[in-house]
Amino acid sequence: MKYLTLIAAVLLSSGAVADELDILTSSDMISDDLMGQSRGTNYEIQIDNMQAHSEMDGDVAGNSAYHNTTGDNVIDSGSFADSSGVFSVVQNTGNNVLIQNATVVNLTLK
Image (cartoon, rainbow, N blue to C red):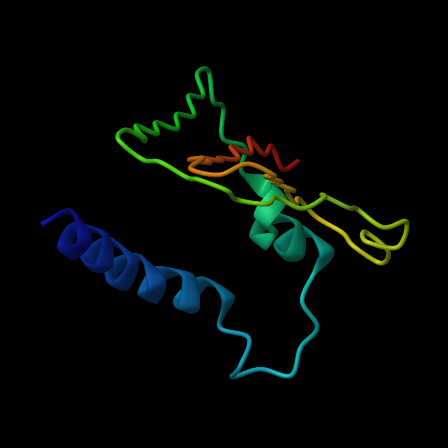
């Protein structure tokens, strides 16, 4: 139901915006004032509370490993060359290990 309401709100509001701008029917230049009113930075959303949550409930039980050989973990000097953004490295040299990894990124765009 909320998706239907959102779609209806978008469809009903888009006609008003198109009528206000009506730039496709005229070759006149758009004024700086109109551009300023239409810009996305015209609106600011105040967020008082931000909550991010990650819950992992893994369990390792009843496993056995005999006569196993484990290797080395190596991160080479060029492993992260030309990388950007958020990335994660998880390494394991053991046996019967449950690895749970979560990354929560809170982002504020201004």
